[in-house]
Image (cartoon, rainbow, N blue to C red; front, side, top):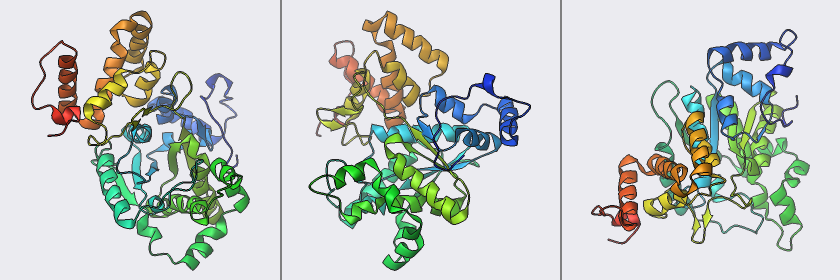
Length: 374
C-alpha cells in the first residue's frame, strides 16, 4: 500500500484469511491475543478518522513500543480543548507502553499554519518563546515522564534555527512537490482569494514535514498523530521521509469533534475554552462540560475521559432515561476538570458550583476558582 493511501474503521476479523495472511498480519493477530492493541482502544473511543496504512500500524503497535509524536504550535499563550484531544490521545498510546514525543513548535509558531480566513499576524520571537514555555508546562501535566516510555518534549526551533536559507531549500525543499502543496484546502482557498497567500505561510508545510523526518532520525519516531483537518501537513513528513530514506512512516488522524448540530466543538460566545486557568477559569471550564448536550455527552466521555466502555454505556443510558439528572455531564465535567486543573481544584469548583446553585457552602478563598480578581 502506498505511503499516502488512506484507510479507516475497524478491521473485520471475520473477513481475514488467517492461513493466507501476510506475516505482519499473523504476527499482529498473535500478539493482540496476548495484549490489547492501542488501535482498538482509540477506535472504540471514536478517535480514528484517517490513517496511512491501518493494517501496518496495527502490526507495528502490537510488535513492540512505538515512538510517536504530536505537534503543538504556540500561536497563543495556552492550548485549548481542541489540543486536549491530541494530548489525551498521546496519553492513551503511552498507557499501552508506547513512547510519546510532544513537539512544541518554536519554529512553526513563528510562521503559523495557513488559515482559510487570511494571513496571520506574525508574533515576535520573544512572545513565541514565552508561549513555548507555557505550553511546555501544560503538556508536562498530561503526559508521564517516568519509566521506560517516559515522554520527551522537543522544540523544532532547535533543528530549524541553525539552517541557512540555501540549506533549507536544497536539503528540505528539494523533496516537496508544489502540486501536492497546492492541493491543501487552506492553500487552494487562499490562492483563489483576493488576498492570496504569502510564501511564508505557503512554506509551513515544509517546516512541519521536516519535523517528522528529524524526529525519525533523532529518536526513531515512526508515528505522527494529529487532527484530520491537518491531514495534508501530517502526511507531508511521512512523504518526505519516504523520499529520502525509502521507509514508510505512519500517520494517524483523529476526527473533528463537533456539537450535535455539526458545528465546531469548543467555542463559546467568549471564544475558545483554554487550558490555562488565567484564560478560562476552572469554574467556567467545569461549567462548559456540565452543559454538554445529551446527544453528544457519551461521545465526549469516550474522547475526553478514561472511563471504561461499561461505565460510559451506563452514563449513556442515564442521559437517555434520566436526562434531568445530568449524571453523564457531571462525570464528564469532574473528570476533565481534574485532568486539566487537578483533583483539589476540581473539588473546589464542584463545591463552588453547588453553593452558587443553593446546595452547599461556598469555600473560601474561591476567587481563583471562579476567575474573579483578587
